[in-house]
Length: 395
Ligand SMILES: Nc1ncnc2c1ncn2[C@@H]1O[C@H](COP(=O)(O)OP(=O)(O)O)[C@@H](O)[C@H]1O
Ligand SMILES: [Mg+2]
Image 1 (spheres, rainbow, N blue to C red):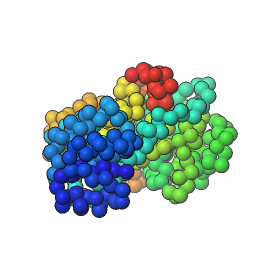
Image 2 (cartoon, helix red, strand yellow):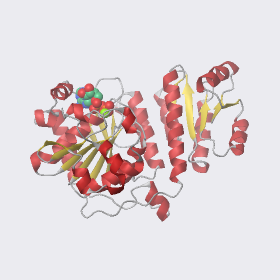
Image 3 (cartoon, rainbow, N blue to C red):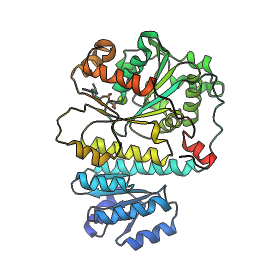
Image 4 (cartoon, rainbow, N blue to C red):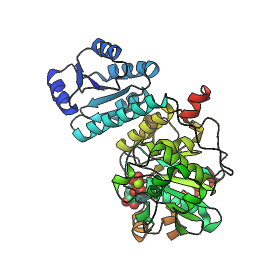
């Protein structure tokens, strides 16, 4: 259920209709507190557009400590970088333009999904898979927004890490509903992660090897299902088992993801040595990156294992470096330029690092592969929420 704080009657009525049945309206902050006290598991408080942003920011900052699973979403008439920065720093999950109905609904759903995961995370987790014999470095490429270049970066990083066959790499497409790694590499989807569902109790290196599609020297791909229906049968436990098996088989596992904290993404983040967060220099992407960073913090994932990559960093969109800094408050670890050669190489089915090795985009991606992945010493202890809860916290 959702609590809606909105002093203005008209807005309140309008938003109650938009957010659907079961919304509890409140026009005073005391009422919000009372509703939360009555319903401690209440996952979401939405602040309507006539709310003073300061009130929502203070409320969220307070709740962050006492009710970490509670989500707060702020609706505004018009977005500005200043409010965004303040709100996101206070732990507000999202700030959305109130007239963008689809975005409002999506933000609420995403927040509820995250709250649910956080509440479940507090429950005892299933036993982790047995420790592998040899350990690959696992890299998850993530963004809370589509179209930032996750698949482009994951695919090119995998090719760069394989380095013409000098290393063994597996690229995993965890964008289970709409994966496009197969299309980007022009692979025929004959088998993939969906085939692991019927064999979930006997997942090991041999089984997983049979599900891989070879791409080139050193590089194999674990493809996503062809249709969204199959995706639903692939849960967190299955993804964890598959990744544990893959870890024993190769030098690097590179994981492409959808723009949401799905079960598969949570499983991947949990076992990754490096979380590569991608954004483009525009307000929605930066805002979503800030949200992703906050989520990783909430999930107890180590900051040392985080790399922020600004893709298309030279795009002229009117944002200054100071703006980017104000919203992010996290250093940018790598910049990848924008070039129309990127979509051209994708259309040819050959990643740009292989197609045009001397291209500035290829050089930037190879630099990330070398300096930030290959030469990086992983911080392995306390990688995930599960371990943090199990061992009483080690951040
Ligand atoms: N550095 C870049 N320069 C130009 N176009 C890019 C760049 N990175 C990605 N793109 C383009 O942006 C689009 C979205 O990229 P994609 O990797 O599919 O994003 P995501 O996986 O995050 O949804 C693609 O058409 C891709 O060609
Ligand atoms: Mg993608």
